[in-house]
Image 1 (cartoon, rainbow, N blue to C red):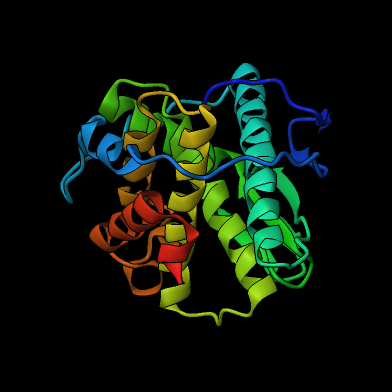
Image 2: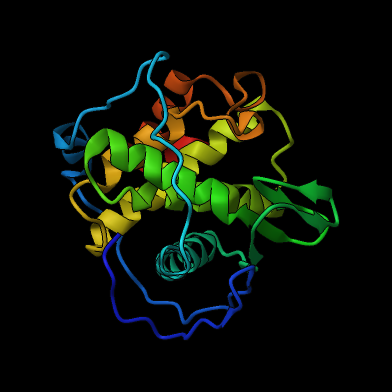
Length: 244
């Protein structure tokens, strides 16, 4: 995802935790008639059930800081996107808190070790090592920076936050619905001109990944790789309305 001027400054508290505040909202149109065409003109999916993940590399301090900056940019667009969507339906949008950590962390919903949205404290929890492994795996497959593979995780968990505000029940459908919402956010980002040319392929590859983080990729709870990519494509091609 491209860097762009943000109206809010995000504070980074150490390397273990990140708490991001609300941003100012712009009025931005969602129309982009070529988004569905662009989806299929982007780099192809390089994933099969036999595909191995990239060799493990240790995340450096610079890697962590770069990833946090990218997440901050993505969060500002997510806030703008969902605030606009809720306003269009005459509803007020409430921002979640965001916490990035390493290892594991205790939440109001229990111990978190990968990526979770906790309804009890309205917080998105993201394991930095999990996100970094997503970026590395997709980068290894596509020869890109892989950043959208981490951002799509954030967008998915934001989808759960909006579900909590609209009353969608917890189920396997809810997980695929969150993938669809991540696709709708990516569509909006494309219309805003903040995507890199490889971001769509990175997002789809990221959702198809079957890494050792089995909870987030468990097909019984989150859907198969094909189902997850199809849900993402549905949101990307038609917006939030296609996720209902």
